[in-house]
Length: 178
View (spheres, one colour):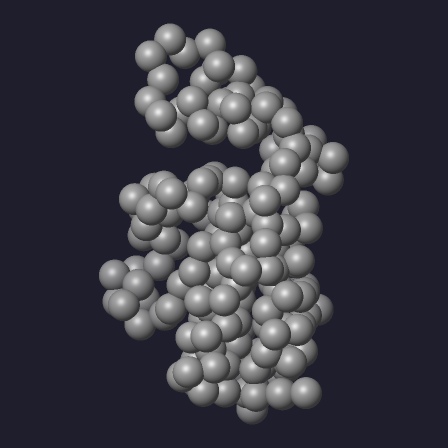
C-alpha cells in the first residue's frame, strides 16, 4: 500500500465515493471520507487527492479539504469533482472550477471533472425537489439550446454513466508527478 498518497472524498449520492474508491484501488493507496480525517491524517503524505460533487456551482467539502490540506504540510493537492453535466460541456465545467478556485489555484492545483450521473433515490429531499423543478422548467421551454435539451432528457430520471475509465487521466497525472 502506498501511504504517500491519500484519497479523500465528500459524497452525497455515491458517485464521488465510487470514483474515490476506484482511484484508491488504481493507486493502491488509502481512501477516507472527509468527515473521518484530520490535518494530522494528511501530514507526512506527499499527495492528497480530494473529490466532491459539483452542487449549485460549488464543490462539496472543498473549503474544509483545502483548510485541512493547508494545516497538514502535505506537498501536493489534486482535485476532482463529479456531476451530471455532460463531459462535452467543457466551458460550463471550466466556469464551475472558476467559482471554486482562485486564478492562482487554477494554475497550481490540478483538477479533473468525472461525470457520474443522478441518483434521485439517495439525493436529499431539497436537492431532489430542485432537480425535478429544473427538469420540468427546461422541458417546458420552447427554444432549447442543445445543452438544455440534453439536460432536460438527462435529469428527468436517475442515471449512472460513471466509469472507471474516466479516472485514467487523474491516475496517470498522480503517478507521473510523484
